[in-house]
Length: 295
Length: 214
Image (cartoon, rainbow over the protein chains, first blue to last red):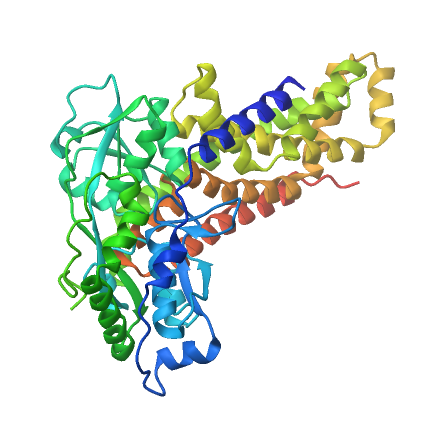
């Protein structure tokens, strides 16, 4: 009985840590109102298929803070990736009709190849290896990984300091190969979600936690015992995944990205999500086709 | 295909960890299973209730929940063990509940006359359980125990969710680098199948050897 009670108490505690903190204000409607709509759509293309269907199917996450996270109260999906999904839908359809299908890092290539989703918007880092199986439009955002530690931890400032340490990272995130490259002597410990990683760092299962800067900034704001050490040590270009070989659609999406970059809508979208935790103006958007694998 | 050869070492490490985890959990589960089954058939009501409570509580909460609780909640009350140890203990405790039920069904299959005869000979409860009832009981449940052993192997994949880099987590990591999910996960699946085939063969041989002709 004591065991069950403990279990209930612990579940409650865990869910509190997971859901705590303020939610970002959904000014997504304002973004959509300012979004451009494509002048014409060539018949027989993927864009026409989407327009006939009436909504865009996006493969994404529902649990990535600041990027694509479903608000449990409004059920609206909020964040950078989610906003870009709505803007792309508006460009094709004239309205932000998006259906998000939950994708996982293991299934993204297959979901695109068999046509389950039209695009993947899910912190999908562009790599030449992945580009042999999917086409990447973009990059639409450049992210970087940073190191977080507990406040009392000393001697970790640079990625090389991670050698010989136990480092926590999210399972299936670009942090794993990045740590292996920067500190081959580090022992990597992975957990499924960001709250789990934070909890593990707090409890001392590892000395450091490597995660995307924007996501970590948000976590650190909520967890006073954790601090960020140093500056981002990688540059991760996120691309929009498209079915391999669909050059027309890729060109179309790239045109849309160029349009919103030029009009300043890109910067507004950044402000609406990542800009809520990063101080200052939006960074310059990445040049389309600049990442190896996105040419 | 060359991806698999390139990552042969990774898969080997993952497979080894899966086997270690399954072996430790199985041994633990078997011991717990026999103990809890003994509790459930004991003449003392308090012990019987304890055995029933153990089985009910362990079986009625999903394994993943137990793992997450053990890994993330126990450190908050000062119990911090490494992930492999935690997972092995949780798996053993969880599978122990199922083992207990299998062993108990074996005990129920032993004819009442055997226990009565043992008592008539003046054996105590533990003597009759250890020397008369359990040896016959375990022989009748070799096949169900084998099935539970396979279930234990498959359940080790849950440990991937709490950071143990066994076979499933290895497949995830290799796929993250190579982006070839179908080949990578089919290979992992084949390795799991190979493990269960081995267990199946061992179970079959054991059953033929241990069978009681009645």
